[in-house]
Image 1 (cartoon, rainbow, N blue to C red):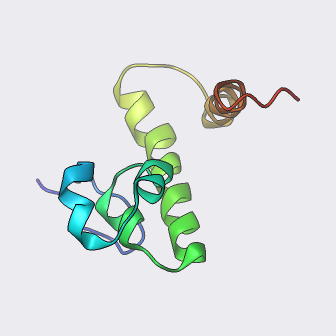
Image 2 (image 1 turned 90 degrees about the vertical axis):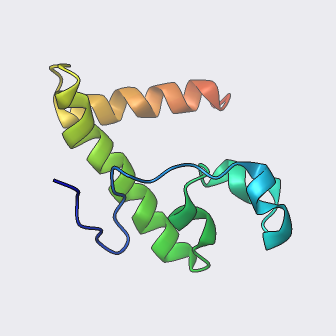
Length: 94
């Protein structure tokens, strides 16, 4: 059964934009890159709404997708692990 879209909440049937698809839209490569390439995230002009969309995306990934993959880890531990990986990948050593 297909999921029902909820405003500000990612659905499983979204696909990423290719940068070539955005050339005539006025959206620059930096925005596409930093917002992950998802249409709802890229097109959102309100920063607070975009941040809420991003938080919902991460929460859905951690709470639904990770367990479906058979990985047994608490959502808190997974969020901490993702934070550590993000900081390392971004060059932030704290």
